[in-house]
Length: 163
Image (cartoon, rainbow, N blue to C red):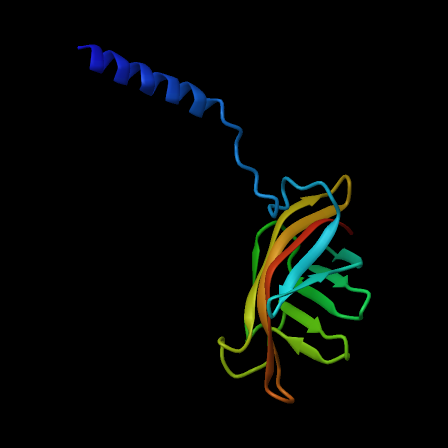
């Protein structure tokens, strides 16, 4: 009987401490981050944009650009103007991801011969029409048809980019 009381008391204490635990906040979740940033990994190497901007053109096209001091750039143009996930499909003529390296060589999400070579996603998770800020995530494969090379952009996050 005493062992049962100790076990129940222990479980009660564990439940109390567990319920007081702070909720986990993902530092890469753009909806909880208030700083302005635009970053990603390009072939596993960190990219941080020093200049960034966005625009919504005629409520039908969203553009988003981040450029680093060394001349690298990641840019997007997608049809529509809302909060959702945009597919950067190899066959798309409206949703495109672009990467330009420090030597001005351009790679896009719509070049190549198969989805293994290019394509990906741009997720816009918030658009604040009052403060004119946009946040989201992205990842895509960019291909350069001219020489058959590819760049893989992962862990892309943009927070509070002005439009």
